[in-house]
Image 1 (spheres, helix red, strand yellow):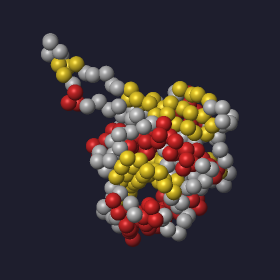
Image 2: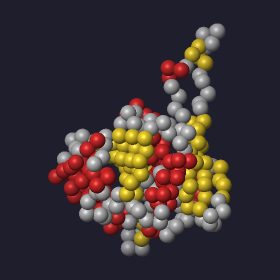
Image 3: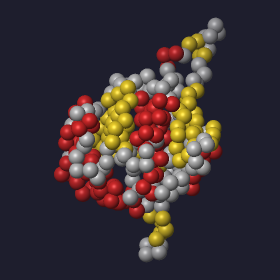
Image 4: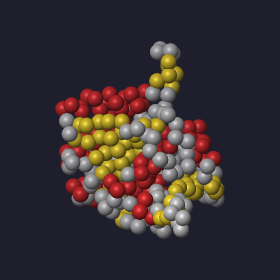
Length: 273
C-alpha cells in the first residue's frame, strides 16, 4: 500500500531528503506555522494594527514512502496532518492536558500535540520497529517539544492493555487517533478499544481523523467508502447502549501544515453524554 497514491501532495510540499538506509525510508520536514497569539498584536505610531508575522516551525519525521498493509503506520497520511491542525487551532483545549494517541504511526500528530499538551503517550503495535521509529522521531524534534512524551505498545487486538499503559489510563484527558480505519477486523478491535477506554474514564474526549477511501463496486454501480461505512456501523451498534455522543466536526478551521485538505477528510468527536 502506497501513501503516495493517496497523499502525493504532502510530499510535494515538504523538504524531501532520502536516507541511505534503504530506498523506501526517508526523512521529511513538515513545515507549519505556529498559531498567532492575539495578545501579541500591537499598534504602530499611526494607530494602525501591527500584525506580527506568523512564526514558522518544522517537524522532521522518518517514515516510509510505501509499505504493505500490515505496516501502513510507517507512512504519513493526511488524517494525521488534519488532526495536528485541529490541535493547533484548539490548543487551549489541549493545554496542560494528558493526551493518549492510538495508532501513532510515525508519531507526527503526537509530536504536534506535545507542543501544547502536558503529557503525550504515543502508542502503536510493536511490529516492524514502529515503536523505535516513534521514539527516534520524538528525539529528532526535541527542540520544539516542551512537554513529556512516552512511547509504549498498544495492540487493538490484545485482550488487555499493558501494565505500563494501564497505570496511566485513569489520568488521560483526551484520546486522539488518525487514519486507523483501513481494515474491518482492525476496525472492530479499535472500537472495542474505545469501549475499554471510556469504561476506565467516561469524562474524556476522543478525536478520530480519517480519510474516506472510495472504491467502485460493480454490484452497486457506484463508489463507496466501505471501511468508513463499516466503522460507522460498528459505532451505531453500540452508541445508544453506551450513551455515546458522536459528532462530525467541520474541517473549515485554519490550516497550519502544508497538505491538500481534500473533501474526503473527516474529523469525528466521541464522548459520553
